[in-house]
Amino acid sequence: QVQLVESGGGLVQPGGSLRLSCAASIFKFDYYNIGWFRQAPGKEREGVSCIQNSDGFTSYLEDVKGRFTMSNDKRKNMVYLQMNSLKPEDTAVYYCVIAPFRWKCNELADFGSWGPGTQVTVSS
Image (cartoon, rainbow, N blue to C red; front, side, top):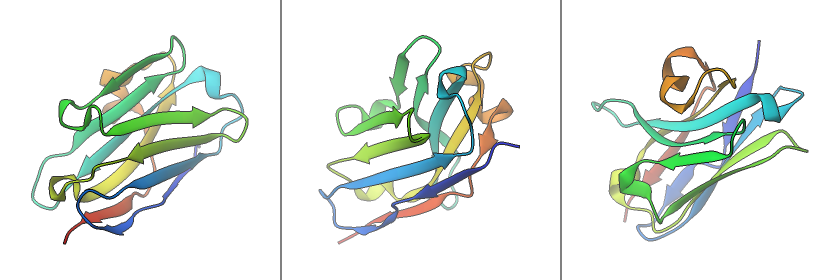
């Protein structure tokens, strides 16, 4: 099974930045699509961003556009989510999700492999 481990979460002041990392136990990143999801207590899970390595397509949740940037390092099998200008509304557990390329970004939640998550708390 694919194993994912997120890191980089923590407590940050509003307006601050964090970079989340996801280590994936895969051999060929090009054959996978990767996304970040988040879930706050009492709220529904939502997709944050997604990269389709099969075609280079990248998408973001409307609320994080211009603030978050997702990227991946194929050599290191790492996925990143750079989060800038953080808001209290960004507080959530963030999850890395990965699936073979046949499953696209809009299908990752149902068919992807999930990491255990990392807590991001934005508070003054």
